[in-house]
Image (tube, rainbow, N blue to C red; front, side):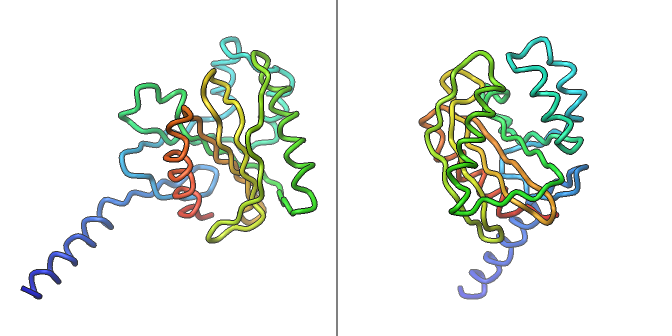
Amino acid sequence: MRKYFFLLLCFSIFLNSAYAKNFKSKNGYTFKIPKGYEVLERDFKELYGEAEDKISLDKNLSKELLEYSDQYITYVFNRRDLSPDKSAINITTAPDDFDTTPDTLKADCNEITTLINELYTHIEVQTYLCEQVNFDRFTDGLRIMYDSYFVNYIAIQYSFDLGKNTINVTGSCLEQNCKKLDKIINDIINNLYW
């Protein structure tokens, strides 16, 4: 009986590791894809060019942010989601050193809220939470929850340093799904390597 239990345990470990897929971004980072999710990576500027006339964003600020960001944006989405365009997780990077400390937290939160309100031209964004966070491998990160671009959705955004790069991981959710989304985002962040 013990022998069968040991074989079953080894087999389940093998299956879990055999089905764990990693994604390597053209920006340089790698992460473990959450179970049931798919990944799509696009050239950020090309994508913006295709959507520029269809979205309600400040054009000048959008172009500034594109110039600041690395070339690619990564989308992580659940293939069974009814509206993956609204609930996809996106990952962007920039060659910068972003440090949130207890001393700069309030200023960082105010700056991000102001930036988002300037960027979104169709809604007034309310911030629900802004706090400093530490992950298993990262410190001095920022977690902010605010009104998403999509009406009735809440955005959860994490910003943190990885080497000499700032990483932003953002997802949108209906309020009742935000705890689940937050856990998935944390799993991605804790399995992200440069």
